[in-house]
Every structure is written in C-alpha cells, then in structure tokens.
Length: 190
Image (cartoon, rainbow, N blue to C red; front, side, top):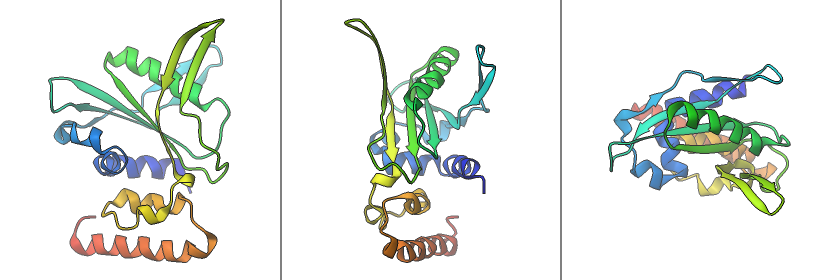
C-alpha cells in the first residue's frame, strides 16, 4: 500500500478540514474558494542529482488582505535524521520561486520513536545564529485518539489510527472510524 500517495490524496481532498482540525486560526484567515494546489514542484540537488518533490503545496488567498500564502505540507512516515534540514531545503526554493510567505507543516505519521520530533532547523556560525527556521509539527503518535473521536471531521477519523492507541483499544478505534465513515456516507458528505 502506498501510504505516501494516500496521505497526499487525503490532504488534497480534505485540505480545508485538515487546516481546520489542526490550525483553526489559520483556517479562519483563508479564502477557501481561492485554494490552488500547485503541480508537483520538483527540486533537484545539483550536487547529488537527487530528485525531491514536495508532498503538497497550496496557494491560498488571505481574507483580510489582497495577499496570498503558500501552505506546504510534508508527511514523514519514518523517523529520519536531518528531516528539519529537508524542510528548510523545501522552504527556500518555494519562497524564492513564488515570492510569498510559506507556512510549512510536517505530519509525523511514524509509529516510533515516541520522543518529540524536532520542529526547527538552525545554522550557527561561532556566536552568531545565522538562520532560525521553524515549521509546524503534527506528531500523530504523541496524540491521544480520544481527543479526536467526537470531532466531525473526516481527517480526524482518518488519522486516528496513527495516534497513540493502547493495543486493547485498537478494535474500538477501528469500529469508531467505520461508524464515522458510514455516517458521512449516509449523509452524503463523502
């Protein structure tokens, strides 16, 4: 099963619901009718010839002004040393190419480790902090699924299975997700 593709599909289909669930203040500031998903932007590291592409980038107009922001969402399904640097490496060309603020978000969907993920990248030269880059972080394995059970949001139901669940609760979580899915189908919201 291609989990990366499924995450991209989920977040593209339910982008507004994703932002509402985790970043309600940001959601309130966005013109939902203006969302434009950008084609897979490919970046090539000339030194290694490695091809990388962002998981999801959406250009969205702000309600309060005639300005746009770019929301970049990256799903990380496994722990990786240097991931914060990779987030910066995506940020810099996005910001340079589109010349607009970028709101970077990382979703950590791995099972282990449970330790808090690093959400910043910093470059220090002697006593000077040359760069401080920070991104929003959603670490599913540190979230309690019960906090999302009553939320009428399809993203909550989809992501609950990657949250902190005791093994004895797994059947209940699966049942609750199926109930929520069936209710949405019956109401015509899927």
